[in-house]
Image (cartoon, rainbow, N blue to C red; front, side, top):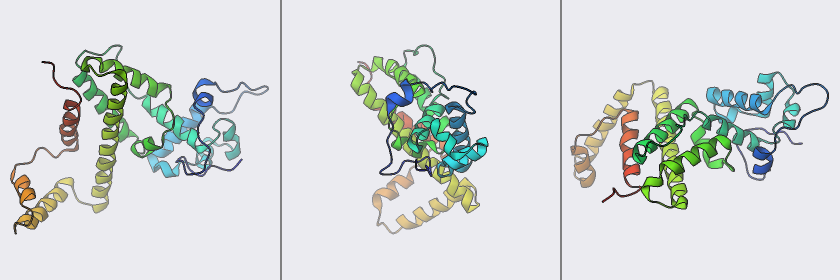
Amino acid sequence: MARADSAAPSGGRAGVDPEALWSVSERPRRGRPPAHSRAEITATAVAIADAEGLAAVTMRAVAARLGAGTMSLYSYVPNKETLLELMIDEVSGDHRLPAMPTGDWRSDLRRIAHEQRAIMRRHPWLPAALPARQTLGPNTLAVLDHVLAVMIPTGLDAQARLETFSLLTGFVASHMSYELAQQRAVEAAGRSPGELLDAQARYLRAAVADGRYPHLAQALAIPGGDQNPQAVFDRLLDRVINGIAPDPA
């Protein structure tokens, strides 16, 4: 079997069989107990991705961390796409799902989106990994089922609720990709976020001073809101959630 070089999928590689991955338990082995498990391999891959980024997650790196031979891992995880699916579902288990929705669907969706943001900050590789996901594991299904229940009061049908949660997750992942990239840029620049914001504001004020950008000038004339990343996320999240369904008459 060819060696998987990365946890990120690439064109032409084998896909993921969801039935084989989620519905079939690991095969019991005769003789000595297995040296490792899918859970152990997945946790190790997540730890590597958290510390070094998704590109650092190779079967060789995971094997080295476990003190195992690279080829021995393929009996637990057949390819890199499967490893990525396991990693995504593993961190989806970080959600703390209440037994029942509160009945306030906007509040419940905000809580879920805030949890998604927190999970993506703990696992900054996750926003880039989600578009490559091919299937939904049990932890992800539990979140999805809870959200469908949360959104019943919106009056949307089940298909629309599925699509709406996809939209919400896409917003969170996209925004977090930007937020994390900005954080890395600030760290690389060796300046504080406030210093960079001040420099950007000075540049924009100078750029609109000659009247070439009247609409931008009008926007800049309005006092801006709190630029703390959490505050920005909350403002944008409210706009997304408030557009999902109209208030009841």
